Length: 180
Image 1 (cartoon, helix red, strand yellow):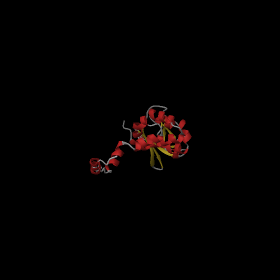
Image 2 (tube, rainbow, N blue to C red):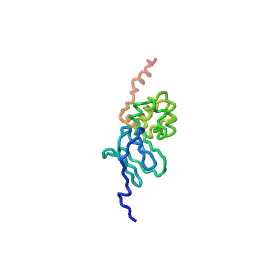
Image 3 (cartoon, one colour):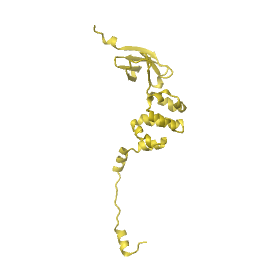
């Protein structure tokens, strides 16, 4: 029996819930928070779930055939978290998406705004942040480590001309005994 492509791919019009999640085939998938409470199209195929708003792809996931799973993406929520920094302590998208080491570092920081800055740095630089975590104790030290990473230092240093000092005058002073 040959099943047509139309039957293999399913498409639904679904309302995004208040937590920016869409339920599809026993699982929930996040979309950017701007689409909360809006109707979007969800297309499911054998290996992908694609979310569209007015024909534009807003999220894409590998299909998960397990049941009762929730798939968050931190980038879908970061704008909202930046507006409401105190939400960082209980936000499932943070708890579920950031690596354990990063989460532990975040919980040691002094303020929600500092946590949000680290999350933004993590999204912007990826695993570079993870390499610098052991050496950081605040957002500022982490930021300095990431921005001052060896690749950038090499680029800066290559543009600096080092001029060796002229020691002839010093040598002549030493010969004359005028040195202090």
